[in-house]
Length: 327
Length: 157
Image (cartoon, rainbow over all chains, first blue to last red):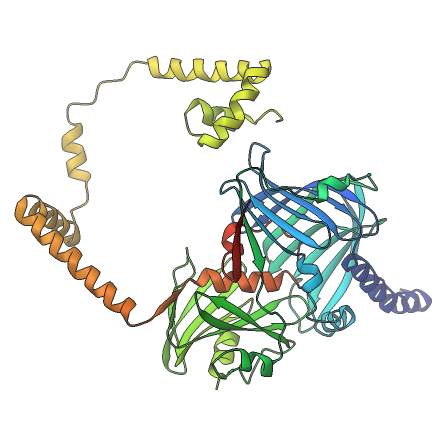
């Protein structure tokens, strides 16, 4: 390779890296135009078909379709109020749009955390649902195979396909099978009126995104966050999870891509293993604990006066070390 | 609705659709000649298979099956004895006593004040938090299990 060509390649590398982050940032931003389409979602052994409509700013309609193409479940938001309706139980839930309440981190801080822990690389362009897409690979900086591949519409910046990986193995896939942009949307498609006779439940989520001191005042438990967390994970907040008169503390960490949770339940609670799993008995600080495998991670639960559970997409040893660092 | 796939028509022919699926499919079948034709062909094939003569079983089939059958385990033998013992009036009394003992045990555990928290409540909360991640995928409408828990009040329209 000639010197000038080598120089060109070396100089282009950081530029390409920045181009990849720019493309990622575009993909993370809310779409500027309306769109509608059909997509398929596969998580583990579960596959679903969805019909989606979107109109800026923040109006969304998502229908989960059964195998006959009938709407099985519906989510509608006009940007302020979110409705979820389930056909089988003929029940509708109404609550504030979660996006309005979601204020865990500043978007720039989120992107900075993502950049700290992951690198983005552009792969050759591909076509999804007839649209030209830039292909992004997101891989951990500490090494290892990609954790996500994203196919981003080259014109509109919408993610048309997303594949998640764990240890190089595909764990989830979402992809548009058909999509159209800038199609006029009817305002009534983003409003919902419960069918006659449907049961309506008004959701009032418990206070979210508390500081540790606030959470301590809200319960009669002393917060016991772990002294050690896996590298790259940043503590975001504590949330209160009420359940039948008890209040469970939900500690939350993120590394920019993955979520990590720890739950602290009062002494008088008993947490059953996740349904459909066969928990394995392991040791945490020489005491018995249970490890369950979930489609999207692992759950480690143990008792130390109170009842604890850690859920995350991490090796068992990292979960155990975190558990053993709980004071 | 659009025409269903061959698999669904076959499932309908075998009576394997749910009631809801039947309710959705039947009006379509009444108005779609193509699907109605396919369904008639499926029914004809099924009928033809059922009309095939059943070949006679070999005379030594029973002996060959018994010879190749695994020996019953100790547990299976115990369960067979238990089942035999529980049949009849004395067995009914024993079963009732066992049920009563189990209820007392369970009742005592509840009386201890232990609150059973299904792991699904915690897993759901984790997943809702995971949805806030920047690269979280497009979220399908959550199932009712993910909407349970938390503070709710009920209005009936």
